[in-house]
Image (cartoon, rainbow, N blue to C red; front, side):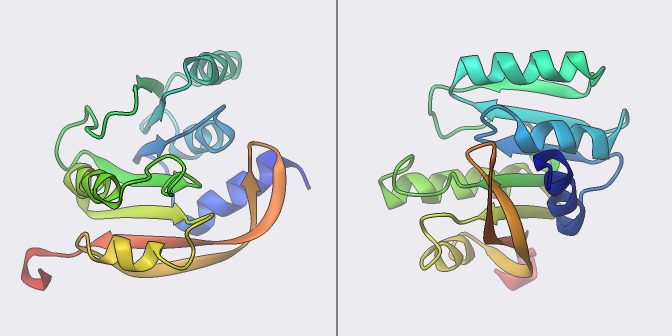
Length: 179
């Protein structure tokens, strides 16, 4: 099975549709970002955020090569603030990023989850592939004012090319009355 078609299957299952704004946090070479750009179309937007500048260069070159003008690069040095407006994003993709390797301190992960809560629209989705933290991710995310809305189990992409079985957890923001 081709990586591209598998990425599209996962993204459709998560519920990404035309016109949405999506943040691919820790996007790497853009395995999912390019496919998101196709799904959201010209009316949508993809923010590709990573600290690896070379990966972002490659992603943007690939996007241009496919005439995808809806991908915007967000460079980071690893800071925990995301330079996007409050409630401006429909979906945050957090695939194989929320773990001790990148964020060894639980307070860092909590601050990052608070940022996702801030930038997500009221009905937005935080979609997490909790590779390496399957046992703790759900509790950590729920303690940051999210609730588990749905799950996707199937074939996922790891390291931009490897297909493996896994589970994606889709969280929604708790409304003010549920806090």
